[in-house]
View 1 (cartoon, rainbow over the protein chains, first blue to last red):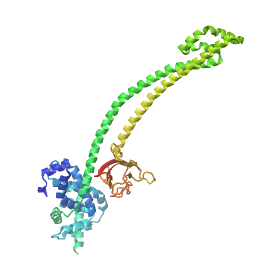
View 2 (cartoon, rainbow over the protein chains, first blue to last red):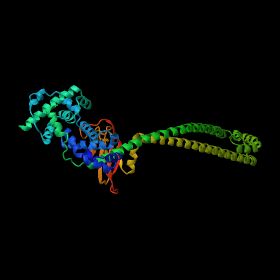
View 3 (cartoon, chains in turn purple, blue):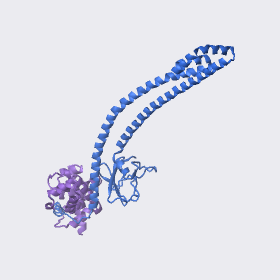
Length: 178
Length: 296
C-alpha cells in the first residue's frame, strides 16, 4: 500500500483533486475498512464510520503535511472516528459492574492459531468496551496511559478493562470451539 | 506481552477485508465539507465586511439624522407662526369687519398693500355699518372688503399649502430616514440569519423553516424543504461538531429533530443542513447549505 502513495498523490489530494482522492481511497480502502470492522459492532456501522473517516481525512489532509506515514495518520483518524461512533465512555460505565468471572480459568487457555474470520466473529459478540480496549492495546499498541487519555478514563480502569476483555474474549473463543 | 494480544496483533494488524464501494458517498461528503468550510470562511469575512460597512454608515447616518432633525424643527417653527396668525385673523374676521381689514397687514404683504389702499374707506364702512345706511358707495366698499376677505382667505390657504408642502418635505425626510434605518436593520437581520440562505432562495428553493421547534405542538415540528420536480435529493444535517444527525434521500422524509443514529432528541442549537439536489433543467448536482436553528 505504502509504495503506491507518492508525495505527488498526497499533494494532489491536499489540493482537493477528486481523481487523486479516489486513487488514495482505492489504495487504502481495504485496510481502513478492516479498522472500522474491528471497532464496530456490525458491517453497517463500519461502513458509516469509514465514510466519515474518509471525509475527515480528505478535509483535514492539509494538517498532515508529511508528518510520519500517511497510513498511520489515517489509521489514527479512523480509530478516532470509530471511537466517536460507538461512544465508548458510556459503555464502560454500563459494563464496569460485570463480575470478575471472565478472569477465572480462561487465562490458562492455550490458543495456537486463530483465523481473522474467527477473531472477527468473537469481536462482534463482545461488548463495545471490551472490543475497544483489545483493539487499542493489543492491535494498535497503545499504552494504558494513552488509552486512558483517548477514552477519558483512568489508567487503572484501562488495565482492569483489558483484563476483563481478555477474559471475555477467551470465553467466547471457548464457546466457539466447543 | 500476553499471548492473546500477540495473536490478535499478528492476525489483525493487516486485516484488510473486501470493502463495500462507498466512494460516491465520500466524494459527496468531501464536496459538501469543502463547501461548508468555504461558506464558513466567506461568512466570517462577509460578516466582518458588513459590520465595518454598518459602522461607517452609522457614522454618516447618525449626524445626518441629527442635522435633518434640527433643520426640520426650525422649518416647523417658521411655518407655525403665520399659521397661528392666520387662525387669529380668520376668527377675528368672522366676528368683526373692522379687524378683518386691519389684520391682513400682519398676514401677508399683498393683503397689507390692499388694506392700505382701502384704509380710508374702512372707517366710512364701519360708520356706515354702524349707522346701517345702505348706499352704492358703501355696497361697493363692502364688495371690496369681501374681495379683500377672499384674497385674505386665499393667502391663508396659500400659506397653509406652503406649510403643508414644507411639512410634507419634512415628512419625506423623516420617511427616508426611517427607511434607511429599516434597511440597516434588514442587513443586520440577514447577517444573523446566515448569508447562504439567500443563495438557497436564488436557486428557487424555499427552505422552510429556518427555525424549527420539534415539540409536537403542530407548528414547525418537522424540517420541510420545498423542492419540486427534482431528479436527485439528499439532505444531510450536521451538528456543530460535524456529526451527522440526519440523512435522507426522500424529500418526504423530514427531520423531526432526532439524531437518526442514536435516536436521541437533538439539543437546541444551530445545525447545518446540506442539501444536494438536481433540478430537471440542470445537468449536474448542486449542493446548498443552510443554518437551521433548533429550539425546544
